[in-house]
Amino acid sequence: MGKNIILTEQQVDNLINAILSNVLSGIKPSDDKTTLDNKLSDNKSNTSSSGKSSSISTDFNKMIDRIIDNFEGGYYDPVTMKSSAMGESGETMYGMDAKASDMLKTSDGQKFWDLIHEDKKKNPSCWKLEYDPAKSSGKCSNPGLARQLKDLIAKIMKPEYDKWSNMFLTPESRQIVNGDPGLLFNFTYCVWNGPGYFKKFANVLNKKVENGIRDPKELSKIMIDYRKNFSEYSSFANNLTRRGGRQMEKALGMA
Image (tube, rainbow, N blue to C red; front, side, top):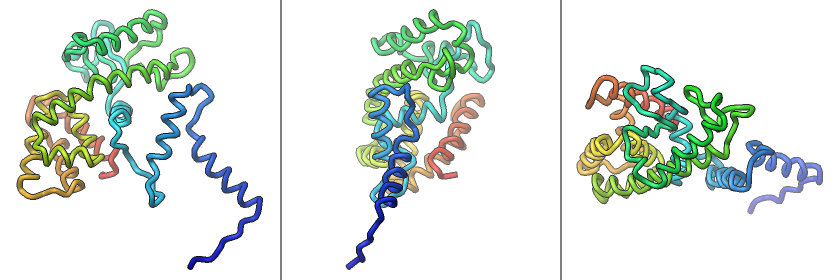
């Protein structure tokens, strides 16, 4: 039986203050109720029963946020901005290319671009290359807009993920992916890459699972290595995929 530990009133106060400091450290005066709820939820979900911090959540919306923050840049307009790194991309925000996708055919996609164009008219000087309303300061700081855009991306991406995972992953592979943060992170990012990429990644995973490899951590490492050494398309596309693999390896703490 463990010993009772008696704390003084001052020690109790110090302990409470330390806990509150940890919870509230990321909260800003400008945060609205939804933002506060998300931050408090993150604090709860990122602490395991062992007290160790979890690097990533399997919540789809949080997964989308993590991908945008780690891999996708801000705004790009091929008419007024020129960047060789963007190749033949059309107008792009958070990796969502209006030219290369069917976004404009959906109500959520149309709303996504309407929000951008409306704000661009109000604050034209803010919308420069790589502009991100969540990471800017002064009059260009607009975390509310960033939140709306990210939530719309999640609404657009989730049906695509569900469709392609059901189409290309075997039932056993799909169950493993959906239960592991690293694998889910990789395959969620495949939705940005497109169905061709998703199918190629799914084929690799399906084969490994079929051959008896079912440990999620081992499979996650295999899929990271596949992304890091991708060589299925053009050199431009391959290099982007490989760079994403290196970034993902670091984001997942596997480097």
